[in-house]
Image 1: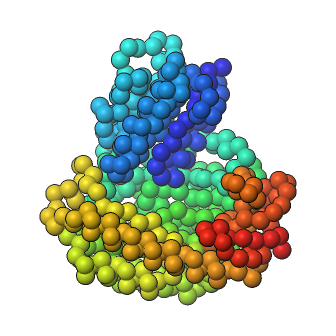
Image 2: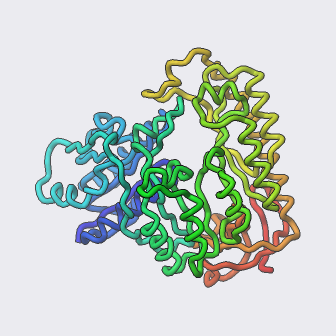
Image 3: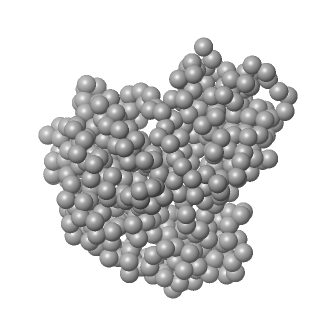
Length: 435
């Protein structure tokens, strides 16, 4: 039985992709082992969202070669799709693009049977790819939360983003298959399922007959045994009246949403080619906050996009201060080869970008701390994760609004729902006790 290990970089969708690749290989007789153990094959699932991500990819490939000098080394994922020549580093045996990932079992069997001195590259144009089949169910082991990919690809052309090139056009898993995948995860003992996608809000627009995210969510929330359905990132334009009504009404939808912002300036949003305005963003967030007490709200913000002035950045600070964010992902802008933004004028000095990033992160930390302190003294339902806190070894529970609470308890609570009283906040940790 050949052994295989995995290293995954980048987003949550990439992590789900790795689970799907693992499931497909296990169905062919491969046995998965941890990354730091000897394996016949090592698969590096790469990211290319930033130049820094490419650097991390190269580091991981070199590390994989050191850990397994006699194993076969495969590079797949977004970096492999966008820059296959770069991914074919010394020691790499196989480079597999986004569309070819489904062929990995066949490609690996051929590689193990007849090794080659030169890396084999299997990367094709994604422009013609129009469907997304339901993936084989991944063996998720003891994980408390299950992740199901509903959609892949993106039809937007934001000026800073390489993802449409790396992932292709938007494609959705058919509703029947998606509902069945979620049901199977719940029946396997996962009280929480996270629905993922590169552009999740576009779900169903590519299918025949056309459908919507709201329509399939109505079916999913009726699955018996599902306690929380958590949604990955959603652009504000996708929050239709139908979807918002469902999000506010269903107790199964986790009260936590990640709504990318990128900038609080309409001028910069237009330069970024983002499909929304500040006014639209405000309306969506205010409606969610009005209907959901203790809403967990996250966003991505890019600092220093070409052309960003002090006034543009101040507008972002004002908007972040005004809206009930509980966390922010702050990114300092850097050029990504192959995107429109690299050709824009108005470069911002790196020292200014660093200073603005610090200011925004400080504001985000203050907002997060205030939110977490507001939970003290109340009881919260949590999903107990399958790994303990580093250091102190306490259990970790995840609230519906996406806050981790550490508390003392037995391993038998893992992967189950329980109630915890929040007793305090110590630095980044939220402390609790069994209610």
